[in-house]
Length: 255
Ligand SMILES: Nc1ncnc2c1ncn2[C@@H]1O[C@H](COP(=O)(O)OP(=O)(O)OP(=O)(O)O)[C@@H](O)[C@H]1O
Ligand SMILES: [Mg+2]
Image 1 (cartoon, protein in one colour):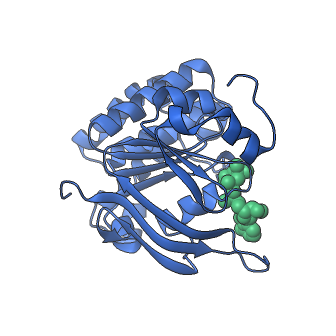
Image 2 (tube, rainbow, N blue to C red; image 1 turned 90 degrees about the vertical axis):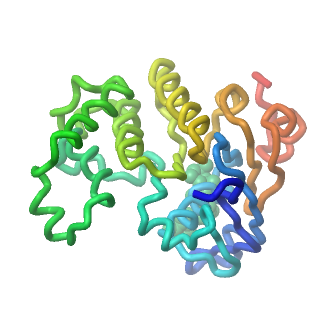
């Protein structure tokens, strides 16, 4: 990682879904520095999840270009330098897999195995790797759930499992799509403290959230988005009553 390189550089990016008349995102320009905890704020349908899909390479921009830490999206993903935790409804929670095996999938990119080998060697892990699994589960306070099926966990616990998976992957950019939805106070603090620490260690944390209070408390930078980037800056200065009313069409009583 070169010092002072931009973590995310998007130039004139637009994106559409087939069948839609208008683009979902248009003229998205972003220059995000490394080592920051950044919140992505905007109403339902603003294109937050779509932007994450573009950054992680699950969707291609219709126009424009994206670079991550100087690399193309494809190269960045190939090097396992980006980790993505999708929004709740996008994960298949019924998949029959144990918590420890979810964490193990975060190690796949570090191994030079073919897909067949990876599947075959699913249970052949080095001692250090197994220790690391315990360590990350300890960090998210879920060591006692190591051998539980993922579907038996609560919503907040599942999010913590995926955070542990992202931690073991040790990616440089971490995308979290609404990690705080349906999460209790204790889980929220665990998640946010880990993210803060990640940013202090030089990682770039990008979190889509409707939680204005948490954004004000934890984020270094906020991006206001509504189909295009409206503003980027200090959360306290950006998230004003006027803006909330303009974009969300209503006042929020706690502001
Ligand atoms: N797979 C899809 N096919 C067609 N349209 C889609 C698809 N996914 C999202 N959209 C549309 O794109 C727009 C942006 O959706 P997106 O999920 O990016 O918004 P969001 O900001 O993440 O919203 P939320 O706060 O509800 O999560 C919405 O109008 C949505 O209906
Ligand atoms: Mg979304």
